Amino acid sequence: MSDVIISAKVSGPLLVCDEGLSVWGGVDPATGQIIDAHHPQHGKSLAGHIVMMPTSRGSCTGSGVLLGLAFAEHAPKALIFRENEDILTLGALVATKLFDHPIAVLRLSAEDYDALAKETSAEITETHLSAGALDVPLSPKADTLELTDQDRQFLAGAFGEAAQVAMEIITTMAVAQGATRLTDVSRVHIDGCIYASPAFLTFARTMADKGGRVRVPTTMNAISVDHANWRAQGVAEEFGLPASQLADAYVEMGAKPSFTCAPYLLEDKPKQGEEIAWAESNAVVYANSVLGARTVKHADFMDLSIALTGRAAQSGVYLDGNRAPERILDVTVPEGIDDAFWPMLGWLVGQAAPDRIPLIRGLEGTHPSEDDLKALCAAYGTTSAAPMLHIAGITPEADLAPLPHADRVDIGPKDFAQLWEGFNQGAEKVELVALGSPHFSTNECNAFAYLMDGQQVSPEVTTIITLGRQSLAQISKSGVKARLEAAGVKIVPDLCWCSISEPVFPPEARTLMTNSGKYAHYAPGLSKRAVRFGSLSQCARSACSGLAPTQPPHWITPE
Image (tube, rainbow, N blue to C red; front, side, top):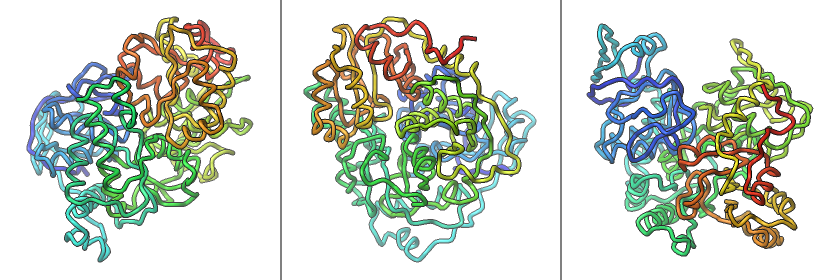
């Protein structure tokens, strides 16, 4: 069966993406060009095309970037998926329904998808997809959604116009997902407060002006500026002002200004089995996998919609049957691993399971810290669309039986060697050490302060840690902040590396060093800089010497 999720009459050339794409971080929001250096279609443009991909992946901010592309007249005419997809579908829904920028969305059967991928152009109507000799009948997704009396009151406007719009978004997407009911959630984490284009502010301001107010406790992701200091940091008014206004709009609607991409570091953490609604891909993966809470990877705009209603579609990994592993990954752990192993493993796991939940075996003898698991989950979220993973002997639901059709893949030394090479394309000389993607924890700040005690950042290197306000308060009280600053390390709250911009990002830097697998993946496209990657101790040495290591760590065996 091939379904029309969002109807629009369009025609145009086909762009077939061999892999899923994170539109945020992987696409230039001003032009629609694919900037993900690791993607097979790097350099191609989404603008004006009918874009095919198995599903999307990566950041939940992709929905907002797609809306921004629509406002800029650089959006695709249609999106065609083979698997379930929510992030870009939601962006297309908001563009089509709220702002009159139609983007068709189809979900094709595997047979129809493969046949279409051989064509060069296509035409889409409400009832048919045509391409060459191919003619595919389309039908709306069947509506099996049962609503409560209160859900219907939301739709009737009883709780205000913003809540009404929010419930319309929720129910439309719930039908597309095949959900049969909605569920209550206990908390929300907003991802749409990153200012990736004016579209983000337009949406938030529209909902605030319609009287939007959150109904459940709601935290906020990292934003695009240090809210209190952006002017002093030299950020241009034309960027800093709307970026801060975007954050203010969510605070006005009742969200807590936590401004962190790692809400699992906050004191009030979700409990196992708790149904929550988080956006921000790394946080979703961590919440499901490590905490055992339940949330699908909610896209930007859906996060606010759920916050305004307290309701979410009961689909995906909210349901027991959808949390089981569908691929088994057997990992050969090299001897003598350091902390660089964990983000590299996360990236490799995502590559090996880009569209399904994996069970990782072979780590039973390891003892990863919370920060190790944070790094793993964040890197996994850059290369996989799945909202969680299991690690045998470590994560709380790893004893779930794999699905009967689950297959098996090996990850071994050669994979780490190849990835090390891919993550270290930059020059030996580095001008920036970038730490805190996701936001640094207090333990990571403590560890880096220990490594830097008695040493000094080179005058030719800028070293920056990004972190949340709670962590900043804790390291300020403990004296760790003073130790880091005495060594020449800069501490920047509120924003993170995936939302940082010049001049906070040093304009003179040409090569950066990071310990983050997530940022090693995104930085080439986002910052237009070359990247070096290594452990935290290697980052400390590079901060002091200005040089990246010339050889991989001893646990990585060259091919």
